[in-house]
Amino acid sequence: MRKRVNGYISPNTETRSSTIHGLGLFAKKNLKKGVVVAGWGGKILTKQEVQKLPKIIGNNYALEVYPGFYLAETKKSEIDASDFINHSCQPNCEIVNTIIMRTKQTIKKDEELTADFSSPHGKKTRCSCGTQGCKIFVQF
Image (cartoon, rainbow, N blue to C red):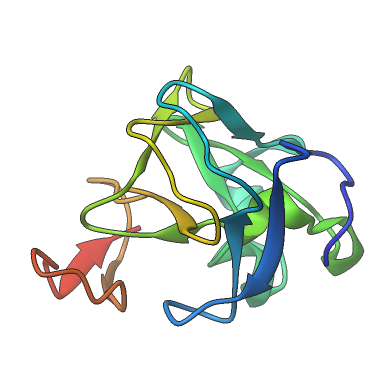
């Protein structure tokens, strides 16, 4: 279980092994539609600053909050539970106000919480969400 460092995760969620990618965020109990389950924290960085970060952080955990500006951790020790939410081409959660994630449908206990992190500004990456409507390649 990853602890909270900069972000927020609902006490009704926890990190576990994921079939999508490494770790994921899962519901500890049934969650209703519209429940805030995560919020990202970190430092606001420019694209140039993100490119200087260790690849594990810059490629996986930097969230674009405005063209050319990102919310990111600067050290591996700052990565927390909210950073292990995986992408899905058919997500069960939605990102609102750039840094808040809420459920977009009822989530069952033990279900992995996912969001669509694709961006028209990102680099093309092979998707591993495994959903029936998977785009195979998405931009992050």
